[in-house]
Image (cartoon, rainbow, N blue to C red):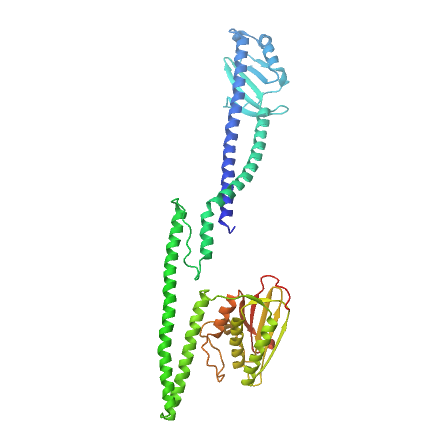
Length: 458
């Protein structure tokens, strides 16, 4: 049960049902005790009636006289009571006719007890002293047992009803109690780098949830302040770095333009200018990554035809491949419109294509394969280079990671695939590296989801 509301409902229903079951068990014991006590009182009342019927001279009665005096009483109570009178020394004894000559069970040392008697079932037996006689009166306990069985049956029905009712009540209470938490969750979900000013609504009631909301709002205040500081630092740092770099490059170009430098110095200045340009590129790429990771880059996700987009891109890709002495081929299947922003996806394809061309041998083929389905647009770029091992493939999208072979002439920053990964993730997609066909070379695959059928491309 991952939901707190579900757990609260379950535990509330369980505790309420168990509590009611315990109360029913206690009630069972109390009711049974009171009913048994009632049978004991009936037996005692019957004994008092017998005592009156026998009269004050009961000690001088023989068995026949005793039978005559109490027969009327025993006959009137034959439906309820079983009576036995014994006097061991004189062998005087009386048995009510409903016993049919059977003996009432006797438990030594007890004056009131329950016992089972064949043919009569469970009896409640009470023994009384009427010196010199021992009087035993018993009554059937079947009515008590029937009543207790009905009690258990009703209790079971009530427990089932209680379980259902407590589930409903627990669900309602959990929804009511967790409403502030849901408000906190929804607000926290909406708060992002582009929406740091929103805060959790705080109720007037002072409780733990209100304290939590206030604590989170204070944390969001600190986060907003930190994000603003980082954003300002990034913008100011990039500006402050680019200005001196531009001046250094300008002076280097002026020195080259004068033509008075020795060839070795001129070559060093050329290398310096190239490194300055590369440093400017790294600064731009780092700024882009910071904005992308903060979800601060707006996207214009319009439904577009991948086939037309790839036709335009293929022209530039063909020119790049021919310039480096490689071959390029592409194919596309599917007539589904896909929501994407063409300039950013073009940047991804250029980054991936440039890497593929750099690692492919002279005359090698770089192949782009595209397929659009109603649920996803899948694009793969495959080269004929040396490929990468599994560990390298898992790290290829990390910052500043480069696996270009020696002599490939790659002067990149090591951020191209990292930027590509950020762009694809901004589109809600994913990108991965896997072995090329035949196990040699590398295939970069990215997928952009299609949220809903957008219709066939024109």
